[in-house]
Length: 102
Length: 218
Image (cartoon, rainbow over all chains, first blue to last red; front, side, top):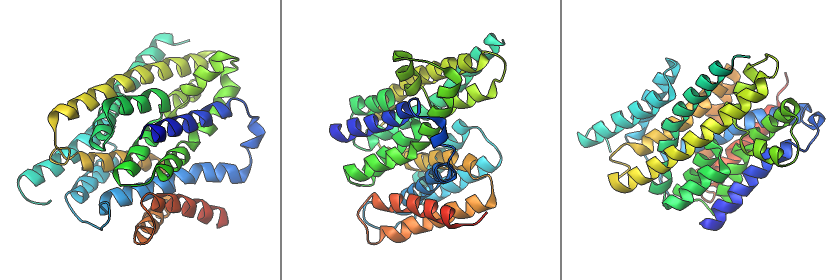
């Protein structure tokens, strides 16, 4: 686990540092611009889908869906970050305690 | 130069980020990292989305390789930020390394939003330092609190993580084309989940998004 943490930290740190040592012309390339803009969107979407619908080895539907939908609603209403997180956790937790969903 | 205003804003951003830091600390420990490992990420990786991504892949049972690569690609925007901050800050030597470490969403956004003479660099450093301090204190608080509080699922923390990722993603989906791309990437990841090793579906979704975008005409 330590190796994973240290290598990952070092590699993301190098990303930041590298930007201070390379010429800006490299980044003004259209392909680079596009990839940098959409890569996080694809990765985050994939991550959300897996966190929401899967366990380690199976598909699942549980209270997280309710939490995610409330988060989405709050984001559309431009609610602040802390509110989005707290309310979605709270709704999921209350429903679980009352046995509405798993 | 509105120094006081910048300092107030920087502290405000720090406090906002802290709420997120608490969730990260809690999530790190509930994903199987210890307090020291969780803190190491906040101190040395210091870029929230990559930290969440790394811990998310580990929690999903993904390999070290998948976790590292995902964190790296999620953090690639910091590289773009660094290039533009280098142009603004004009620092050398050790300060360059320090500036690099503090180059994140918040510090870059604050620096770019202050066009007054000399205010940009001041906004960068103040925000960077503020976020660093608040982020790390909050991580520690969250990591210690979850050690005491216990079952993360009963607290709805697994839903909070998804909500956190949604909150990170939402501001990036400015057009319908990007929203469609996000949904398509999510479907690709779920499809790949059926027959690829843990962690890789996320990478496949990222590559899918990049390839589709490059293939589309303006």
